[in-house]
Length: 275
Image 1 (tube, rainbow, N blue to C red):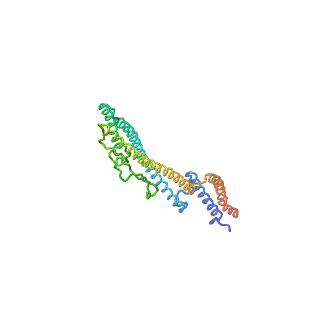
Image 2 (image 1 turned 180 degrees about the vertical axis):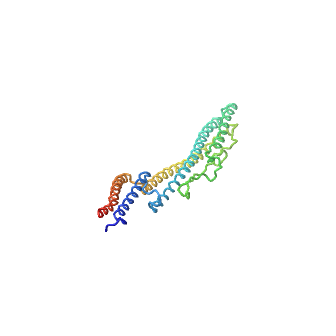
Image 3 (image 1 turned 120 degrees about the vertical axis):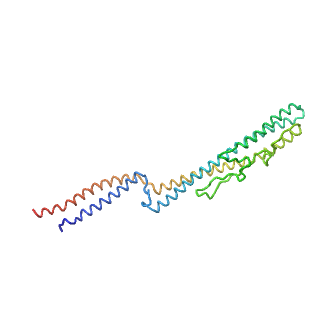
């Protein structure tokens, strides 16, 4: 039927052109964002999964920061403990030298002055071995220190404190220790030897704790990278395919415009009936 009221060919051509334009817009968005799924309307299920994984990645960033703080705190404690160990070795040397009964009083007194100066230095180190307000060797952190271990914060990596204060259970040498006689010097040397044994065990525990934190940090980094790769697999666009599809749709769009033009010109043939 020849009619000017209805043009089915133009309707079909316009529908196809609109579909092509919609597909072209989608491809351009994917190329611009690099994402095949950038919002829930693209694919609600995949978008929800990706967002959940992104939340985990964000959580693991917080875990890494927490571990970094804990590692730094433990490393400061280790540095302090190692310095105390070196001082105790030197103090033992002074005490053993003073235990020599052939020394005169003046020589022993000079050794004692060095001994007490080193003793006081231990107290200074213990007080200042602090990072971010936490000190693991002065007895103030009786519960040790904890770092986040997983993305929801339900697990932690713990490192116990080690009280290295003078007169404690590890460094048993008293805060007022000194010697005036060979016998007192010998006793001090024996006490220092015991303290060194205790301190070595304490440093070993701190070292193990620091190593555990480093190992977990490496694991968290790898896990976070794997999650990010998984998110990419779910939502990233294949730009090679999208580029090829873009060219195809551009050609299809041009053909659609021509088809619509041809369909729109069809009713003009009706004029030929009236000539």
